[in-house]
Length: 132
Image (cartoon, rainbow, N blue to C red; front, side):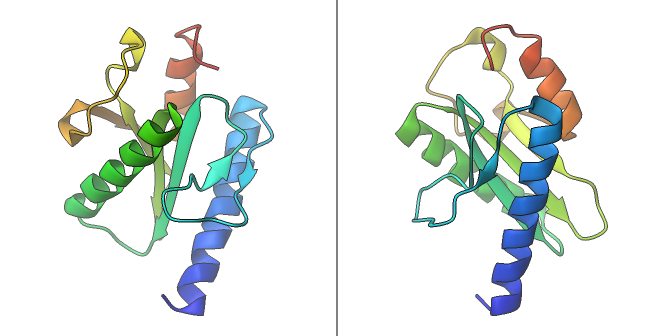
């Protein structure tokens, strides 16, 4: 991975952390020292956050990112949520469609997800009551 790609990823994480702070009021921040299988952002209770910032992506890329997100969430017992932004596009997020049931573990199957903008995701989560 080139330095430019790393910097773009870090900038994307900072941008998303600021957005999530504005939406949720939680002090979301980058995980500075990331190891494989670590969440990209911390500070959003109950959620395992994966952040992707790319020029472009095929649908298969998003499916792969979701699998990574679910794997990380299973390690921590958190709900998985994937945020991604492609160049000149708004942020999108993917989360489990069965979140309202409270059932864990979450299916790693991409067909069992919902995709929306971050504001819609947060409004739906807040409406569930037990989700912070």
